[in-house]
Length: 245
Image (tube, rainbow, N blue to C red; front, side, top):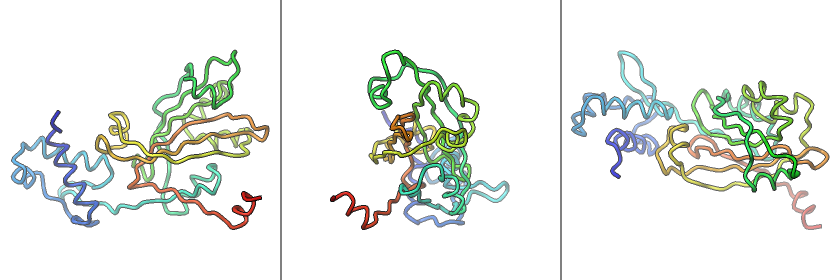
């Protein structure tokens, strides 16, 4: 199936922005110029620009034109607890927020049952899907499975705030988090929510959180845009020595 013209145009402009052909603060071609350059209608040119606005790459200034935004990639340290995510972003001059997409009780797939160590009489967990936004631009979609008693008890707070800080602030202690990094490509759902082309590479942060009693209570994955969010880790010599013992 051929790619729609407005997506093809916005993808070409996107590559020109990320490659530095259009620099931060520089004005993009106008709708009329795009119409002439690509031999398309005004509606198609307008939709192409709207795609870039939704991706957080450009800003439209009424009466002036469309300008390239400064593209900042922020870094989250995997060495620090996730309860400090918001503080970590603020330290980098970025405001984080979430947008709840789905929050409901579901029958979990077998892999989730196994990870959360559910007993036979635990038939339901809570599934939450939420967008993570940095400076109001979507950078990740988080898909989380939460033990039923926690999801039901803290539903209101979980819909408005990040998972781990919400649990910690309500006295649910998290002792450790196991995590792995993988990669995938944007499917139609993630492409729409994150404002990236279909098939765009995404970083997948898979995690499971445990209480001090070694009980897994939350598991999930965050699919993030590699052009806006990076992960880092610090490994100390004493950590390597501890592993070799």
